[in-house]
Length: 375
Image (cartoon, rainbow, N blue to C red):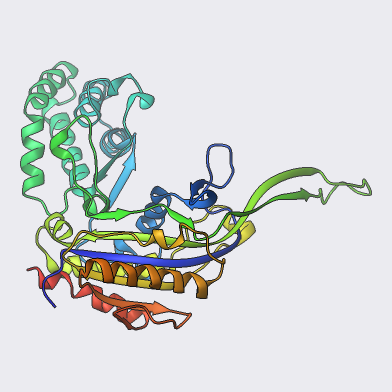
């Protein structure tokens, strides 16, 4: 096949009696589509579970991956706390702390945690910041006034110095930033364009929800009848359509042109998308599911979602949903003839236009080879 520009990943995954992603009122997230409400899983929820998965195919287990941390307290916990633990004088730390907070989070960052943007920084960036802080503290020799002057000089050169460090470091923002992007309002040069684009997953049918009334009984209440606690929560069931697009050249660029690392990332990402559950209330609902259908498409034309297959709600079953997806794909093929190369895993065993059937392992191995076609 010719070198592809995009990898599209379509999934159909079923969950029963779950509360996968909640809104600010504690209810399942929803989205109107095709004139009816659907249950929804946000892209942020999906990406977080894939990013943090403790799994045989975890992203952090990939050789060459760099860790990343998302927080408003990166400086507090990763830069200043180690110096405090090492016994650096509090007067020196009082000069270092606000300067480093402003360098990372912007001018108002020293006003407190609430004034800071929640940022994701990679382990190399944090290690560099920590080493710079340690150097300044050492040079100050316990003199707060000397520390104040040193950190003022350091702050003037910060933007150029961290830019140089990032340019000469593999994955400075960590693997998570290289995949899912980063926006730093205080430092536009630190922004990273996401090559992995994730849609909100929605049910292929109208929402199926119930208010679950439950009680808790006090084991030590003796003969006193009744429940100690009475509460309600929402439970939903659904077959969800998920859609992910990977800009393969963008991924390769963010990984420093390392096609072996890019291949390993795609291999593991295929497993995570198919197998890792996004879900709250794990202990009370066990919302574990795996994709009943996964379709991969590699091509050089602009991607297009197949969600249109479900604008008219279909039966909440894998077979009808797989047929609807295949029908939409066939219609696109007839109209646009974009010629994607396809691989499919399907528990319904329905034919998908132009797709070669395979196991999850087959799909992951196929995806792993794609970056090598670009290098």
